[in-house]
Picture (cartoon, rainbow, N blue to C red):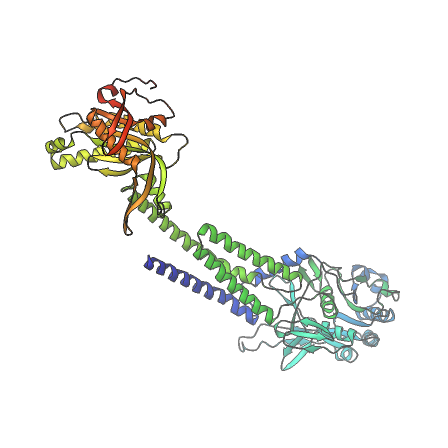
Length: 618
């Protein structure tokens, strides 16, 4: 037992060690913020959370002026070149009372001198930030370590009157924006984003950067590694209040842009960047830029930083170890549901924290915990199958020494009858008649063959009627009826039917073959309280029945011998019958019992009466 327990605990420790190593292969890269093979799954789960909690309102300070299809189709717009049109829009935005302007348009090329001059003059009308872009080309084969970006800056004339900021966004494999880099480190310098400069221009506050956040006055905005701000997508296109630029071609707006942070960009078909989000298959880039600015000013934020990544890693490892332990230690039917419940509760918690602006990884605990749980489940299933097979073999072996019903009960409950119990039972004793002379006639081998056949017949007959053979005693046996309750077959009826059947079977020619004479047997039956218990030392025990009921049933064998009867049943057995006996008894006697005070009323069936008896109630 100790050796088996030792092997079991070694298996548990090995399973937990494997689960720890597996979960660490996902947790460690996650801590550093490196891309991993589960990023695609996490993106899907983030989109599900965004969709589940629905759109969020943008900051009241931010609006979009969209150069849409209607704007480009307007006669005034068609009469101007692109920069003249932008100059007119910027002038009217300034006159409309906007506090600051961000333009999601690259001015990297020179156009006509007049239109460029008009645009320069317009850009100086209010605090303005214009777009620049960083281009991350794959490193060349000659210098694979060189991954510095190249930059696409506006023409110097425009940078003289407006700040230039990068419009780059960090997207996942499906092109959905997940992060807004606020500062880009390259060539020993930090380059700010358009969104950051726009927020500074509007708020008039110099931000303070820390490793995991940026502070705008009293507002603290979480950052991930590399000054990347996790992007809380707000909703479909139009979630940020959007106005068509068509009206601004004719003149200023009355109130819509007053004291606003205006983001100007293209939403017209086939113009400008477009992104897929969980809310919209084609969200204009200007909407994403406006969302970033909104998040910096006073819109909803999303925290995913080094501290939260540590919680992610710890949670994933802890859940993995707990789920694996539950599967390894508990029965499989309990361990698997329990581990699934733990994992489900973890997902619910992660889901709920997202509503509070905490982006904890949902993919990490799934990827870390599910494979070890599956492996542990397969190992436990195989072990339980082996255990079940071993138990079946043990029960089969036990049935060779006990009746099937008793062997099954002991296998299911090893503590069965650890304490003696008193039960109302029917005791059934049987032995062969004239066995001593018969064994001399048959010899050793013949006697063994006869006893084997006789014992097999006893077991078959008794078990068919719901009884259990407790002991074989040379040419006899002790059987018990009523060991297990059976509402359909009362113990007394089963015992008497078994007695009739066994007498018939013993006298049949097949069992008497080789003996030279017909065989006979005697059966004593008595009903009453008996003690079921275990006898023997702690290392070797047997189940038996004791008490006056057992002794009296044994003494009835002597009555059967004296009365030349094959079956003797006490009045207690007859009174306990639910149905009349199948064969009429020869007579009822009141007899003394050796070693016992008083007399006992018994019913007797001689052998010659059994052969011709007709069913009739007593």
